Length: 161
Figure (tube, rainbow, N blue to C red):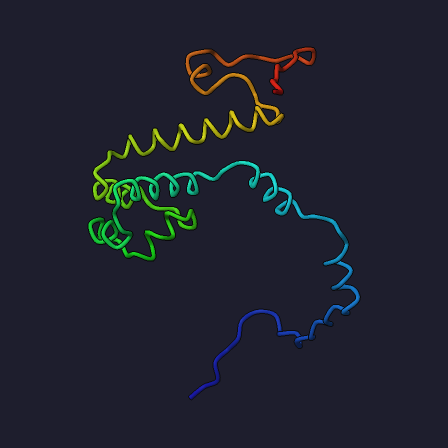
C-alpha cells in the first residue's frame, strides 16, 4: 500500500484561542447597552402577535361551545398538547391545522380570520385611545391609488388620541 498524497499547503499547527477574561465578559454583559434584537422585542410587546390573538379566539370559541380541549383535538386530529400550545399563542399553526381545528369547531376559516382581524383592529383603537400615535389611512386605501411621491416639505398626518 502506498501513502495517500495530500494536495495543498502544509497544515499549520493549531493554536488554542485565549479565553476572554471574566472581567471582559462581565463588562460586555453588564454594559447596559441593549442589542437591536432586545429593542425590537420591546417594540413587539406593545403590539399583539397574530398567533396570540388567533389562540385567544380559538379558545374562546371552544369554551363557548362547552367543549373540552381533548374533544376538539381528537376531532381535528391533532394532539391535545399541540392544540393547547396553539390556544396559548405559543405555536404557529399551519393553514391545514387551522382548517382542521375550524372544522372540528364547526366554524369557517374565513370567519375565524375575520374575528381575529376585528380583535386586532379593536386593540389598535384601544392603543390610539390610550395616547399612542396611530397612522391614518389603511391598506385598502392604498390598493387602488397610484404610489405617491413625497418631497422634503411634505408632512405626514398622524393622530394622537
